[in-house]
Length: 468
Image (cartoon, rainbow, N blue to C red; front, top):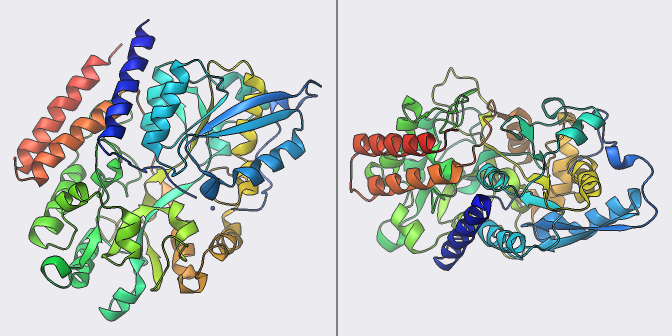
């Protein structure tokens, strides 16, 4: 009964989010590879299957354009002809908030659900907390592999595995290389946040309505896109999240304060970042801001690899390069960045759990290669294959010749995730209060000390309320 009430709360919240115009595409992302040698992709269901075909429903936020479902499913059916996946695309435009709303509605309506996909750890953890997602521990043990060895992303939650990671999308900085050249700036291969703020100032031109900004931050907004609250935290080997591994708050970390200071400096003092009020009131989007050349630098995830050379919707009329997420100090180890993935799990309500798991394991290994859109989180793909993967991805864009491929390869080959801190079931609640207090800061309603104090107090209340 409790979980039922909690699910209806999530449903109501989802409807409110959609009606208020939230379209946080915090997970709309893409890439490829050839099959590697490591990683056991034979599943427990790889034993002789039942002769009677079984149909499984795959609920996903990913549309055909971004996920190549037709090609992917065809490859799966070649190997497993008696398992028939039926893909349910929950948002044709790849809107993850819309997809979550429809997923919750499907769950409350007792529709057939077998495979579930989530675009971010908070959504994943929250639905696990609601009892929507099945444990995969027994399947994984039977197959004889571990998450840490087979994947670059650890999806462990409360000591169990409820999903396997699909793609590996490290974040980076997209650069308008043409603007850099005009400003006499080189493409950075190793830089700091001080360098970034300097670049942003030099790339900012014009005044008033014709002003061009050096950078644009697409978040936070409505408790989503919280990566933009981790600017200085993200490039650390450990403690890069709002919570520490032991579940205590990390908001007293000096690097969290530095993130807020960076946002204030670039928007209020340097005036080199698109104002937050403009982003929210005009419902700005990072693709438009970058491809329309309204901003020269955008920090975003590498799902953008599939669009770097331009698309029908967003043509490329300038040269593009990529830089790593800036470091805090020149002497810091580079490469650490935020990493996003798809969390692919089995529905607790599924009557076809073994067949669903077979699809999940295949999709997060060989399936990522067959899909031809993403760099897999699966360790069966060696980094040395990145060049050919990138060639395939860029080759599908309109103007791949305008992309500085060397800079892209440099960033992707050196990217690494911080030590994974498993998400908590109340992650979205925590995101919401951090977002709310940040807005009071950026709207000049309170100073940075009051902002951090309020965040710490409210986050601690959420932690205490969820202690068992």
